[in-house]
Image (cartoon, rainbow, N blue to C red; front, side, top):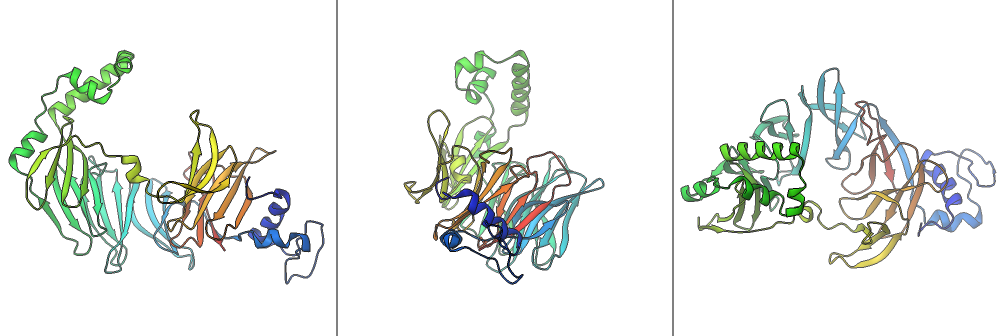
Length: 394
């Protein structure tokens, strides 16, 4: 690893900092319980090492995301109920904001200009599933729409455009008012006029002819069922907003752009980069060669130019940038043991820490100002009783 030349010494010192063990020395020296003993030849390592301290372990809590610096959303399975809970990492207070007989999926959170915190989540107990907006300040929720897939977009942090039952709505985060954006009759007819043959339909889904010819009988049967359903019930399946323009595409694969102000529309073959949309600028990224082999973890600027090599390890897992792009946490493989190494790096100070991690590639989440870190133990295992560990990062 690029930034840890003396791994063994740093691991030993890091474990002391994480667990708070006193009288720690890489030469076995023991002192009073008032301080950690650091040998002179270790001082530069300590100065360049972040402090990672475990402050809590939340039992049977599957952490999802932080709301701010203290509150974290998570999932709890209790008996036959799925709970969406909110936990305060300072006061240890736990509160339930939603219950369901099926899973609850958090789509995103938002803080409006009134200082109120909103959670948008999806309840799979209904078919179609219902998406709610929950106000954490008033403890009230309201229905946003029947479903959310790609048919939604937040605009300027003020409102959200959603599709519900083939109608378009604008929901204002500050006034909590939902108004329909009425599309022209001709545009609606064009969107839902499904006149594709099966051959045209499948070529839109799978443009490569060789891949289409290689489909199994089972796959062909499934695609024909999809075709039958889309032809009978065409829906809007993509929506994107830029300024005053709404880009729409339905199951007939024809795209349109509608101007909210002028109320005019036209055909559009827009190809929106959904990956780029959901993966906005991240300061730390992994680079791979043409064969898919990692070239290491790098710091990049907003133009995507490399400015620094963080780690040249060939096995980088789950790199997770903090929300403010100040820090990054990720896993690497242990050199000699069947376990991972948890790594945390500070972009501005160039300080870092690396610790042995025995609990798989658990989901990593940062709080708002990157002073706390949550990690799910055995996060990629199919268990309903996962624990979440909380660390402070200094």
